[in-house]
Length: 190
Ligand code: 5GP
Image 1 (cartoon, rainbow, N blue to C red):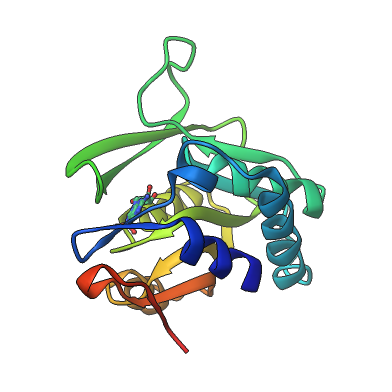
Image 2 (image 1 turned 180 degrees about the vertical axis):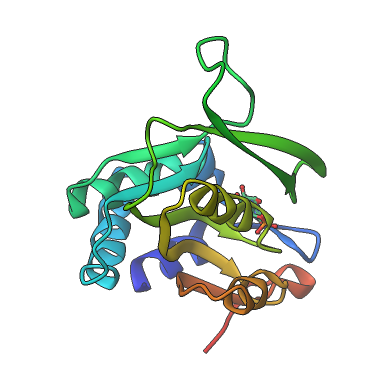
């Protein structure tokens, strides 16, 4: 997606050789016009897949995922990273190791919002080693639902996530694929 790649080049900040900071349009301040475009592209890519629910993880996945859900005319569910007092029983729970926080999170989704018969599009802001997306996919499977596909805004193709998701049998669509962040410069794949 050219508009996204341009934004990454203009505003992305490389931290070390592995992390891209995009706080100015995705992870802290949000560019709603870009999110609208991202929603359009994901909705087009998965238009024929019978998606009934979009699933992401709080908090940075929510902006692109809600626009995708809007365009597909389906609800968005976001997994929570901490158990809320209003969420008690009837939860799907999975462990997800966080790449950026270097800690294990327990993520939860209410059993009320995903069930057998759903076709779920998983959306996330970044793909690194695939732990977040795989945990979301395991929740879909716990629910007896099907993963329609996985939509990633920014894939770091030099990490193992894409391969792990493909090996698990999922279709992965990434809007920007980064081949390398070596020496502080952003190189795209393809
Ligand atoms: P994974 O679970 O695929 O290892 O890592 C993906 C998750 O970690 C995403 O949900 C995202 O929040 C975070 N993440 C991984 N790499 C980066 C990165 O380079 N920049 C930012 N901003 N977040 C990242």
